[in-house]
Length: 226
Image: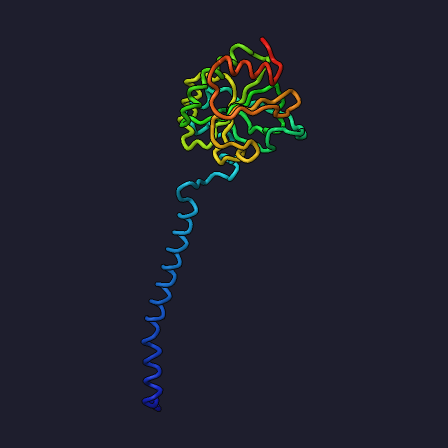
């Protein structure tokens, strides 16, 4: 029998010695791959995720009243028919309801209506709040009122304030000041008077100082009496 040369013997020995190392490396690679796959699956079901389909998640267009305690006690926002904007109308934007109900497209609103821009942190808004509540009680269905909660960082306090004031009319939220330019809002309060055709016929800037003042503005600007 012919013995292999020293070089061949060394090569065979190296191959034999390499087999266990190759198997070890392969086993380690498979183990690492399995860990990566499992971690990926866990991440897919992490916080904010569930096994349910996307249709089971709340949509962004739903009223924020679902997440604000007490908002369901406020007057619901109405469903406003789609109408083309008129000259001098309220800005053509849609704002979410502070309570229940759909988003409200301001330019589609028709009066006679009083639109009051307010915020719970605004002192003058608190001073004039009783006059708006009393106007709704006295005028009834002869006039509509709408509140715009403006640049308010605490929606839960806005809901609490509107409830305490017994404002028996709907409110929308403008936390990004989208009405600022169109209505030239320097800051709340601001009260706009909208006629039956949807045109803004007058804007009172600043605090309403008495019930008599508000009632007189409604009579003069909107022609509504009771």
